[in-house]
Length: 504
Ligand code: MLC
Ligand code: AMP
Picture 1 (cartoon, rainbow, N blue to C red):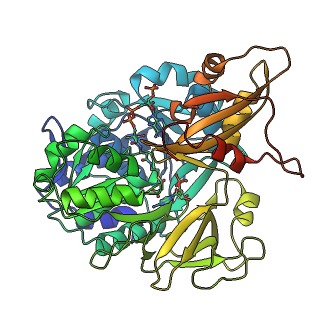
Picture 2: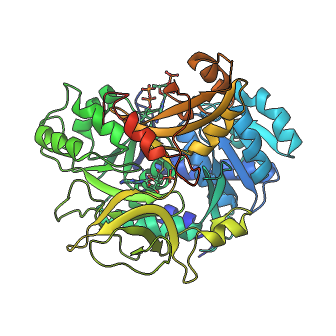
């Protein structure tokens, strides 16, 4: 193969068929996908992007943004998507760490980014969600036929940053074959064909929306309705014309609350997938009662793509994430010793397979620490396998909050809060939230004789960390509960505040 991932995309592309349709009825065919991604790849080459160079992209969701991902594969560049919610302070770290050759931003944000990019030697070009921006301008001058870079199975296709337990984000390096093998497995397991029409309402800067949703459509030659973001009204309007939806649990929580959801509106749909965070059994049940469809829950990670899935034909059991996908080995091991555990025993979930990433960008020690000597990746999720082989996720061994499908590492938020004047210390926890699953909550201890309040804490965080990481509530207490070792007892705090948002 000349270009491991792109060759497969090109081979699946159906001449004349629709690839993307947007809410305003604009259509991008597979022919346009090939031509525009070729022009964009040529533009990257013109901008001196060489195979192996990183291209950081922080833009609004649009068909062109997805074509830029494909263009990066074709040019041999490493695609590095960034959440649009990241603040300038956060971007400084990512650009410094990844050292991209090129940073593609929205026209509105470009000025603010230029200074940081220049500091790290990156050039800035722009892309907007209306088909404009300097990068597309350059691409329009290029020929659509592009001589694709030679890329093998093990070459990097993307780096996705995942927040770090120590506060520093880690870039997960994903190879062409990590992406291709997992997408092909999912196409097969979930029975995707060229007749499918996916409602794509996820962001395209994370694994779920970029690799699971988009790659599956590309590799089955199917089409998607692309929504700028999740909107329950729009999803329900599209359902009668669509066949599949992929979403985080919040999508389904909002859909079951919507009066427009019923059996008839969902009758053309064949598949509803949920993942990125635990789906409540209650939501699964309500959705089934209203529509007759059993949501198919699966389990994945940025580092591993998808690991397990409930079956397409067999029983989809609420509260489980199904079976290891074909080609993926999954085992449960003792947290401390690493010795393997038996049926029904709870321990660390460890995985191995062509889906598992190559390591963390420029962090060989962290990489080594998160793999067992026999190559299994230690996920940080706690789980068990039942007698029928279904995997259950029962908790996390990592201090992590998942809110609306986004991961927030408390350490990062605590470090920012602790740096504010008047704060002695803080503990950030996730507590049940009816919409987001978990709500980020800060428990703060003031310094003696200071008066810092909730608004002051939130004001202090506004420019520092992305909105979704900011606490929904800040609570002040006199002392954090600690165990005899002096460690903050977050379990006690989670119990004390479990009803804060009306959940728990
Ligand atoms: C938005 N807000 C959030 C939030 N999303 N706060 C906490 N958690 C979130 N996830 C903020 C907004 O900035 C806004 O702030 C307020 O909450 C209410 O916004 P909203 O309009 O209700 O939110 P909305 O835009 O509808 O977004 C909610 C959402 C979105 C759930 C649709 O967050 C989303 O699309 N999440 C998907 C995340 C995802 O793709 N995860 C996959 C990761 S990959 P204010 O106060 O300014 O108004 C992965 C691997 C795997 O995990 O297995 O898939
Ligand atoms: P991310 O780092 O954003 O890729 O998030 C990956 C994490 O999301 C996993 O390690 C799990 O903790 C969690 N996750 C993903 N899918 C599920 C699921 N179906 N149920 C429970 N947790 C999930």
